[in-house]
Length: 370
Ligand code: ZN
Image 1 (cartoon, helix red, strand yellow):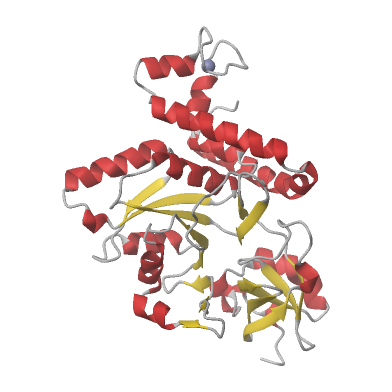
Image 2 (tube, rainbow, N blue to C red):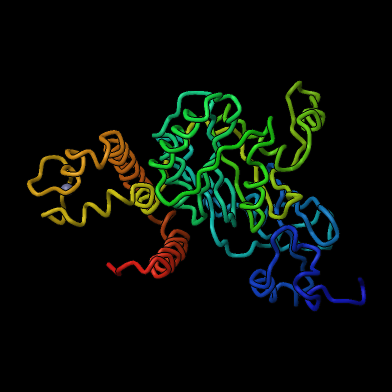
């Protein structure tokens, strides 16, 4: 390998292809390659350090140069890092501009953005079928999923715990109604049902696995990775302070193709500047609103309101309208509180990409331009 430059290898032979490396990343990395720096995908971030998968294996590197004050510019799992191969410790010098990023607000009081995963193609939202469905929470996850620039996929886990097929179908339909344009899959990791379909969906890129604790995320991840739960348990140990430390990576290559980024069980996911995402979750309401008599209609009591008319004749559920209002309010509150300087630059880029994606989708559907 030493006599052969990595950049001259055909794309399919590049050792990082299984991690998602493609010609676009190679082009973005070219100026760094000239300086003898190495590309690698961040598989885990700790305080001040990260693990990076490179062509030479996983290396530990210092993140001092990529830890700015802006929490959204801090290096995170899924980033493509520029690693200085020399020196002890090694340093991450930069990371390539992100294609997408999944961001939530850490708490609705402080309204600070936290980036959970970078360069994600699919936002997989795991929801347990074994407990009562919380459609509002699903809509909240969806808004964040759309906003990230990734394509959301809803996975209803533990489908084997719903015995009656008609009930199962009804639950899937309820979720589908709350998620227009989103693929909804019922999966049972225990019975092996639907895992192959999900594997195929995720094989084409990077996926982030999201969900509240108890949603069956780790069981689902294990099923996708083709390994037993015991192995995960075995990699946990207790350090000197009696604290549990997980030594597993957050970013894993799937045997069926694609890459999976696991996240901790999220107790709460606050919206963070997710106005576009909210609009996409409730696309049917936004479409109805175009027929309202007043352009600034708030859909509360205005005459000629097409949204209220749809609720009246049963085409739109009151629950859905209430959820839409709630998420819009929450988002406006966060946006008003967040420092514009923190948001502007990076968000503009993502929004442009999102708009391009939507325009392409509209064109594909033969939809009329607005
Ligand atoms: Zn209206």
